[in-house]
Amino acid sequence: MLQAIHRCKGLFVIGFVLSGTLGGCAHQLKDVKTTGYDVVKRPTEPNEYVLMLSAETTELPSTIRLQWLRKPTPVDSYTVFRKAKEVSSWGIPIATLNGNAVAYEDTDVAVGRTYEYKVQSGDYSGYILAGIKVPPVEFRGKVVLLVEAEQAAELSTELETLKNDLIGDGWVVLRHDVSRNATLESARALIQADYNQDPTNVKAIFLLGHIPVFKSGNIAPDGHRDHFGSWPADAYYGSMTASWDNSPSAIPGDVELQVGRVDFDNMPAFQKSATELLRQYLNKNHKYRIGQMTTTRDAFVSEGFGRTSPNNAALANAYRFFPTLWGSRARIVEGEWAKYLPYYTFTWGHINGQGSYTSCNAVGGRLTTGQLASTQSYGIIFNQTFGSYFGDWNSKDNFMRAFLAMPNHGLTNVWTGRPNWFFHHMALGETIGYSTRLTQNNKGFNGGLYTSAGMFVRQIHIALMGDPTLRMFPVLPVSNLRVSSVSDSPATLKWAASKDRAVTDYYVYGASNPDGPYMRLGIVEGTAWTHTDPGNTKYYMVRASKLTVTGSGSFYNLSQGVMVQTDVHAESK
Image (tube, rainbow, N blue to C red; front, side, top):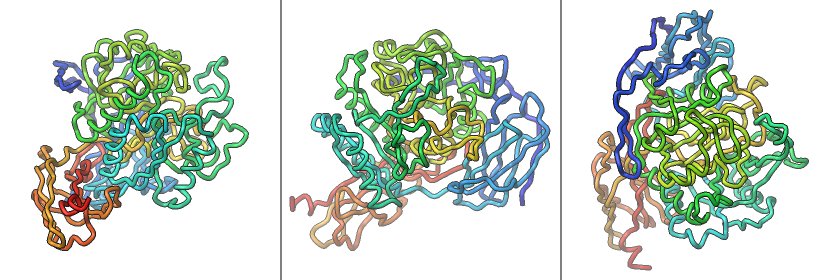
């Protein structure tokens, strides 16, 4: 049964405490007045332009309840669509609601499945992937890790940690070291060879260091005539079948693989070598994955362009997305960057304004790469930035890449606004690389899944700065994992419980090779497990599991895996 619910829900004023950690120190922002989603009252509320959709779920009876704030300017009706996650069209509507609706209940749902919804009134729309107790993702596929060969030896320890972290999050790692002077064709050929061997399971590409940069097209998505020309196009590496001959401005065909890049070449403002900036990034990447990079459920917005139309980058990319993560009470702090960013931490942030290759004129003045380099304390983990010039990221002291050079935060950055991005799958555990590929392949009004896509859809400049395998809501892992076995005797594993109080189960995996693949052997509630018939199993991994509740429902979420090898294997080395 599908049922529509109509009720009034206005904006209201509440007080809250916002806290976070930066370099191990707690920071609190007290007695902030918020109007539902906003801290600073603006002439036009964000829900005037974007439908800020979230979901609440119940298991008995199984129900997904979509909800949103009433649009200040009345609409005649809403249309609700539903599809499976991987289906490429919305089909026919499942319901039409009158213009007073602020919620919709779907009772034709099952526990453990996901459903993607679109709620729309003309150009006014919202999107969400919702589900009830969605099962954990144990195997994410294969990730091709291209490492700049000139950096590999100096970063051997950090690269080993990265490999283990990727394996511990369900990936099989295919690593290649590529010289910064290699040809573009040879670098891409490595990825294509891996893909052609296993097209079903090769899912992502992580470009680490100055992997050769492919430039293409004759475009100026920032609107400046003096900026027409070829822009860097990392979609080239994720495109396995289409031809990139003749320097296309639009992505030819679909991008098959998730692609992200971490590249600190030509960033002298930071007064650290590219090697040390890469080391710093890999270390904080590890900290985030094991739950040591902490903020509350919050985001920061600084709108230098102002809120004047639905094409405002913050509206489409921040306000429409954040409620899917944290629900209708998502805490979005608006204001001057200088007032907040040096002192408080935020999980997500969006900053826009007039730009240059090294700056953005946001609320509160001009924020520059030099300021980021000298202050070293801007605390946003997942960044969105938008402004002129710096979206062309392969430039000296580039503003986009500068956020990744911060010592404590800054794991990703994307140029959002031309076109708009769609991150809502991350609220149920998907990677940011999934959102990147989704955005690159979206066609907007020209037959695409996601409308209100903005300008320059499917053009070659759409790219992710950062690790494409990162996802939200890290779970604290187990510690002190140990295993004992003698020859053919049972192997007994013991570990210290996760410090995350919401953890309920532990998943135990085994492998004959340290690089996997790891196969699940059991699920236990306690902190010990015995493998009665270990056979060739020499390596074990344990992951903590908890039910994570978000603004899109709930899913079982696995921690990073902690790995150990058996005593008998160690003795035989």
